[in-house]
Image 1: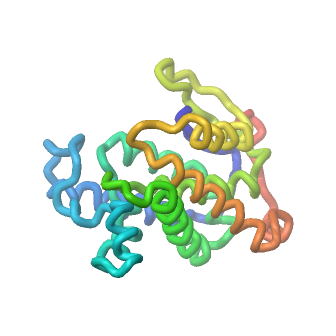
Image 2: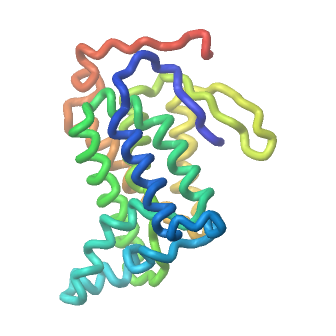
Length: 228
């Protein structure tokens, strides 16, 4: 399912969310030398900044420490245009509400933290993998986990794949299905456990901050009920 928007209204301008989307898109184009004929292909400029779990494992045992840098850089790179667009749609849909709840500075810090946890989870599960790992989906998994606990009753408009029919569902249903899909239906070439690690890190963030009631105290939600 392709998320389009939620029914939460009158939030502050999501500056960090927009900035992250712009940064990911800019780096995607830069990685292809701003050559639009290569728009659908793999990156070229930053190929040495993708993460390989085997290199990270070696670095933790005294090998080339540069591999530890890729744990951070890989979360801002994407394999192809569909990879980028899918991640940015999820970030746009769910990042705005989480940013409004946490505040821009904390959201920025936690976003990076969730991405690092996602990378660590993937490396722990696949310590000797030589496959390049890249993408914002681990960090965005943290956004989804945070949203899952903060706004479970919000309504999300989504497009059904292939038929592209819009439907509306509750956030907890959509995100619950997304999480179970990562756990129960691993996909070839997809870092499912990175998604799981990020999602759980997002949930843990909410719990460590005192839970939903404490985070949202004094932040009244206005919902678009015609949207349902």
